[in-house]
Image 1 (tube, rainbow, N blue to C red):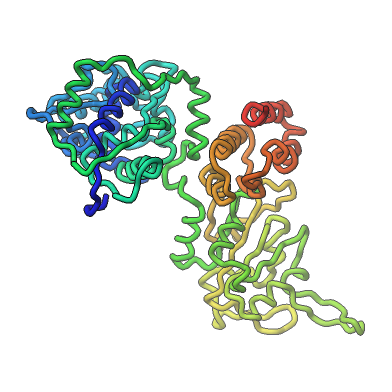
Image 2 (cartoon, helix red, strand yellow; image 1 turned 90 degrees about the vertical axis):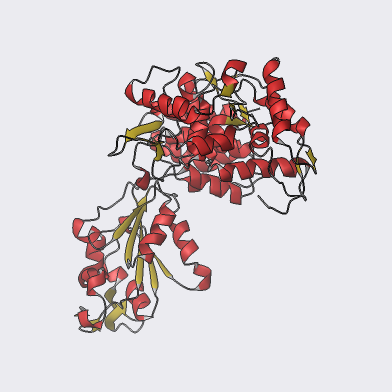
Length: 514
């Protein structure tokens, strides 16, 4: 937050935030917030929880100007659970987490489905996300909702107002822009992912007002104690939800599976790291339209002439790819270079072989097969081609090869060939779909519905997110699905569980039908 800002949230804004936050979650959600404030996030080391380590985070989240250093939980559903003593780091956070670890049922919820709790060598508690995180967060009693079959409904702007109740705000923002700024800043400061936001928060039309005077501890204390004395009825509606709906909502924001975190990283980022580490031959493999060519294009745009792309065709052999003995126009037979040999001898530094699964690549490469490997690059490792001429691959040439793993005509890549590649898996990813529809200018509610549909489809078929790349912000969703997506699904399900196509069609109707 900028130190030079000259406006602050007003006391009426704080009072209105308290009303909106009241009874939107089980009070034990305060532990999750504390862990987030302490730095818990996917891909990071687990958070160390001792008798005192949560104290600073608790104070940042829940201080309310109490002269006795008490803490206030604004989303609790009764005055009894709104207040915590100053030793809550030990008496509530550490104690509850220890109980979750050892029994799972001593306290009113068991979040160990999405929180992994362990210990270090000193028997101190360590807490982090499970592999399926945040599935379960925000749903039912175990996910910190007030009751089973319900979801947590924390109004995002109201909680951001609580979080920044004494923080200087930019003087050039007001109205909707200020609301958006508060929520965005909260997401950054608490390291909240889109899936975590979807799990716990709801949008609200809270009208934030500001003043030039910073709220004092006394202002906040009087507002909170007055509210505890007479909270009234909850104003934020309870939302009942089936677990299937919760699961789809979370999976529409984040790809969730039971793999280790390092296998869930963006394949584009992994590809960049592999190349940066010096790999000179990289295989990008996965179902069609999962971003393999898109990732290459971002690194080496064809428009800049930095690469040579060769599309492999069915059954291509050595004669097609490297060189063949053919007659010229006059009928004289001679060796003719193929596109791969031409690219290498022409000085191309990046050579892209698209869909190598369409042929037996080992046979098609012939005697230059071994030269793909880094250790056999350069003139010192030159070989003699079938035409009798010497040939080598320069050390700085990068080969990028794509392989479609679902193509019915796929040829197997043998171990000897795989041993010469670094390989990067490109699975279907909801995150990449989000990027595609954002670049297309598609916004909510259509964007959210498309993510819901894609997550639903992935339960039945590994459809590449690129099948939605042609959709524009003004494209009618149902005709687009019918003409661009459904034919792919129909082809797959024709001989395998055809009823699944009907389920997906019905989902499209429920999301986009009139």
